[in-house]
Length: 511
Image (cartoon, rainbow, N blue to C red; front, side, top):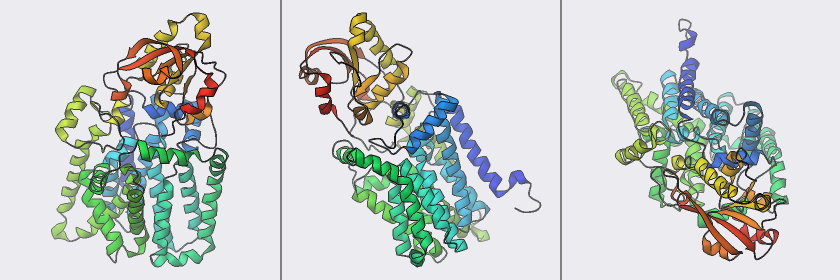
């Protein structure tokens, strides 16, 4: 810091102000819509603490459990960790730019571009493991850059701890690890393979992952089945052009020249050569995700580190006085792009206004699942209709006699519906929901008899194969919800053809 520069205007302070703006933005808007589908499921998982779950490792659930125990279940409380993680990602992007040789402008531009990234904005608006992954990746990249600058191989131990926790948060962090390892082997850092610290870092990561691995083994690797079925039946397999255009959307259209400049700098310039493993790592990650036909957003956590490299590249390109005037133009473009795309990532507008705005702006979130369209983008539509659904189910439940209520089971088609019933239904006197979807299937029906089932979602034809008596009791109508969560029939099912425990294995739906 310059001796005559006040502390509140230092390089770190500027990065902190940008990160603070992100925190305040989310605090001001997080309550505008409702709970997100996956949040109900995560809350349910936090009531069943384990070393693993069908569709995710345990770290994010452990964090949520701690938050709920200390701060409660409010939207503000459960979203606080992801808001802080996203803001930390913005801050660290500026620090990484500094580590890559960037000055004040490079750090500012990296943090600003990360702040306006639609993906980073979006994942900070609801609780999920996805919000922690960008922080893990950029912290890993920061340690790699620090190893290069200090030539301190002991830092590989820290890298191993970071990615170990990252994999215990989300398996796809393994893509980042593979990318960096290939980057090590194909660049001048390949000599690090011979240091014991790199291997000790690997052992550290493995030890952190080991409890979850043992859980996977004990349950027959359910996550592998989940990935296979989701790939076959749920994920939209994008053409390469669509996949690449999705990367532009996730990082922010206005920021695309910045991260592309950062990538080119890392892989093709002498200035970026010491850190080439990061650029090579990204290319390896890109190939892996495309080859596996994964969702386009799986690569999105990589962009903060490329934006950091891009900030340095833009700073170097505009170093000459004649080109200095380009800097405010770049900043203005990033701000304008962020201003235009922010309503597509953050709940700033009313639902009706958002639907009109989405059509007007012409920038849509990439379609990555085989779902019917809704009036709102899926990451917003999945926040509507849940309380209405639970209240409708409660009316059906109260229509039963007290004796029937004691014998009844609520069955749902997916974990969002089941989680919402478990969350909102407590105050309405509803029993715990059951479902064959993901971890709800592992939890099973418990001691519920199932001779009377309130079924939400399955068709009449599907239910008639299991029950001899069906009554259409209600229809759930939720205006802004996803298409498959509105006009949803509720059936009261009686006279099962077989006991619930015999039927249960057939209800499994890992996807």
